[in-house]
Length: 371
Image 1: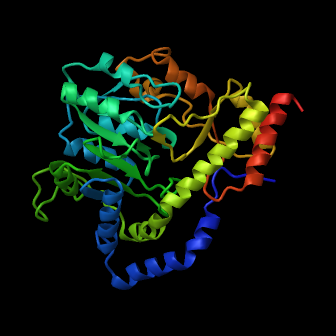
Image 2 (image 1 turned 30 degrees about the vertical axis):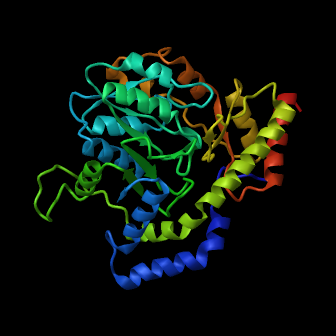
Image 3 (image 1 turned 60 degrees about the horizontal axis):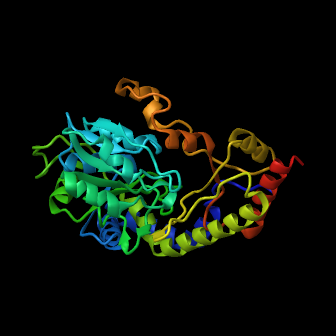
């Protein structure tokens, strides 16, 4: 047996007729840019996020940059975020002209630790970007209180966490804005790049709409330096077909996670740590990520035995070469560094079969038993 990290073929087969009809509808209409499909998706995702506005853009990385610029974050400002995330989070801060200030993570949730945030606030701090890593929200209730106390903007990087919740609050409700990625591997994935800013803030929404079209309003008149980052009408059509299935797919992911956890704790609980669903949080399991001190050996063994895995992320942002000028060093954020050295994500997608999961766990058990 071979178990891929992700397999989208079964999902496509189940939606093929609808997807092709939707794409043909776009082609027949000859409306390819910011048409009815984009408008529908923006409205549906905004409603799903319990906010007033959705602004489709080219990708999730641009979504963060657009939200920062629309919120007035720029040169001379500092933005506090986690070092244990994909590069786009820190990259967008720098692209906006601001300086990323890193803060250690909670070792249980892998998300930014609210207890650490205030230690990094200065008179230059203007915003916080919590990242809802692997599909579980950061503690937004605590982060919102800190932000209100210090008059800071909060932009949620929810690239991996559409549909995640903290209590009754969903992504986007407690932040000034939140950003999504529709990269094909995401829980709601397009057939190419795509992203969105969602917000309840009318000013951020309006500025985001202007920024994504070269800062133009009205057309050909530019008061703002924007750039070209629009959600493609074809991708929106695909996402409109897939969106009604999102919650079902999320529940399938959660069920797979429970099954993994049960099997792993039974067979190799003394060798690894399974992910924790923090009480009161609704985890949508974009990734199922374990911790093990023998990650490199385990990953190589699993590859040899037909199991794909991924490391998200092997080098924290504070020690990435591109951020060397910020002056961080190894040892500054021990929880993030430990996670970067030990985190290993196992195959996870809605159509994953129990026998595939059993095979994965059997191979992990065989590795630790030395067989």
